[in-house]
Amino acid sequence: MRRIAMAVAASTLTFPLAACGALGGSGSSSKASPTKGNDLTVGLLLPETANTRYDRFDAPALKNKVAELTRKQGKVEYANAGASASRQLSQMQKMIDGKVDVIVLDAVDAHGIAGQVKKAKDAGIPVIAYDRLAEGPIDAYISFDNDLVGEVQGRSLLEAMGSQASSSAKVVMMNGSPTDPNAKQFKAGAVAQLNGKVTIAKSYDVKDWKAEIAQADMAKAIEAIGKSDVAGVYAANDGMAGGVIAALKEAGVTKLPPVTGQDAELAGVQRIVSGEQYMSVYKSYPTEAENAAEMAVAKVQGKDIQFDSLTRDRVDSPTTRNIPSQMVSVVALTRSNIKETVIADGIYKASDICTAKYSADCAAIGLK
Image 1 (spheres, one colour):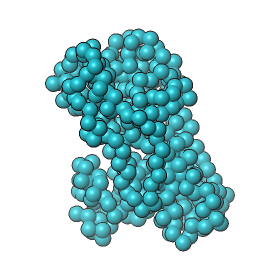
Image 2: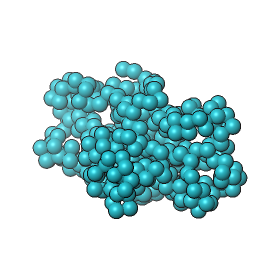
Image 3: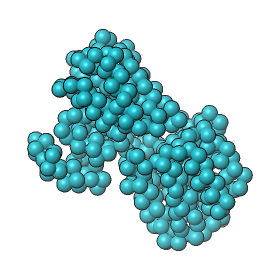
Image 4: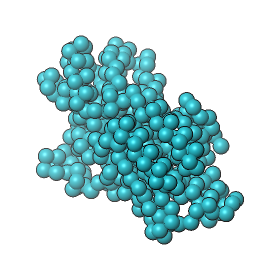
């Protein structure tokens, strides 16, 4: 077992960590008799729809993996909160009342959901925190190394700024939602890279990761700093990067400063192709979802050896220590490795990215 503590070279693109296939856990070994057969129910609670990943990648991948692991006898009950913490509380209560066998939870409000996690625990329903580290007595956690994500974003921004990166260079930080614990980790990882190398002139924590709020905040930053003095922008995800870039264009900025992102959303990848956005952090959501499904099924079926092999890391939340965890790999996505990442992994086809608007830019980087 190990605590999450990693460093990465600035030019390194892929950051592999232990995933299920490399851990050597037996799919059939168990210290105890299965507590449940294949006719199990996984409750899946995802936080919002503004980010297309949840409905497009996470939910389908988890459902398919549960079906595969249970010979199509298991089922997944899926609910999306639409960024409403109160709605998610109700959705989770419904799953508790319906006596699902395990809950995979990506919390809208990691702190506010703690009471429902306790209720699930009292009802004998294990809870696996997914992507965001929910508070309360959760049984396991799966996500990406969030500090590392921020480090990759920060280092990539400095790399893009090149000789312009100096203590006098003014950078704007557009951080994620204050209710999302991942956002705090992304921010901390980025700040650790940027501090002392540039000046963080303005920093905003954007409610619910909303692109329109990021756009409004960026407009304020441009007014305060001056449109010609914004040397770079740390945007915590691609949706907000789009808002940032829109604000820069509206302000009359013709030569855009480097802008970071995360999630490898299609619009973000297209902006990378066109040169409007410098990079995104690509995280294999299907891999995360499939591994979460393996964890959930192993937990319910009492396959302790397999479950332990899937959760060899340990993390702490504000309420719980030594949470069994798995961290999944991340990749810095730039114009140079689109083929080797999102296309090779089947996330997008070249034709998805290279629409008429981007055909010339695609041709320029050999993307067909």
